[in-house]
Length: 351
Image 1: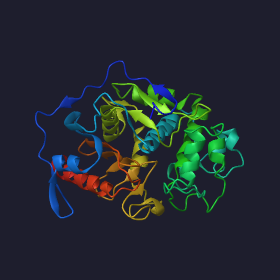
Image 2: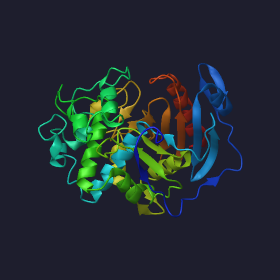
Image 3: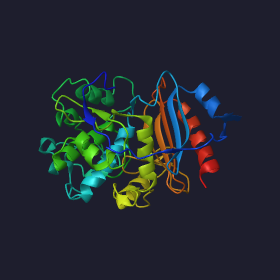
Image 4: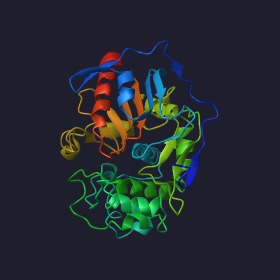
């Protein structure tokens, strides 16, 4: 993606977090479509570019396909939304954002009087703004208009890229409806509140402290604003380090990088918000702060990006799966097989 569109760089740590390696790959078998399958069958039937499994800071399994290697940056698509959420939590802890009950226009004057500007940050975090936005990847929908206004630089970017979506369909906080524009609004709030480019804030507050081994990039619009709804690009192992940080509830070696209370709120089913629960927000997943929640009794959550980008996290066992792919369809049924593989991993390695 950073060979196609302009970007800001995200500097790595001076000393990367070391990752150990298991002496042998596990014998992982899972059931899908009434068949018993293994990791090699999975790789043979899915357009996976990278697959990484980590447990307790060790690489259990790592594989690449289609000429990708451990040195390539692979795009996140909407996995970037969860990164944006974690940065919002850090900004709240640091006092740059006073409250998530503030409206977006409190920080971004360019959104004043617009539907998104009048929406509390809390409801942007949970995709519950009530602002009408279509995202079906038809090429004629609102996500296409947002893509053109940001990555394709058809306009000035910044607040103008999202203020074009200005119809409130229902009050905030009532219904989950997935809308990438809401994350772009969060990115605008983050940039204005911290007075720092989002990529620089990420580098200083999260990417370097967690021990990233390599430079990452974040694509930008014409104003220099990062496309926080997508388009963060990094190596597979650094996505793995991010997953491990989340699995440790934001701590690295006892140091709080992401506020623990924020991360728990972001990744736990909220009984006071029934519209966000698994089975209600979607038929399978629930939703937290820009993070997908699995319906399992054990707390599990996921970063998901269109066409097969995934990070699954099981905090209790410190188990992480990272998956990048080039699925042809935006809503590819292959996602169900990745979930089946993940659940087998939790059952086999999650002790």
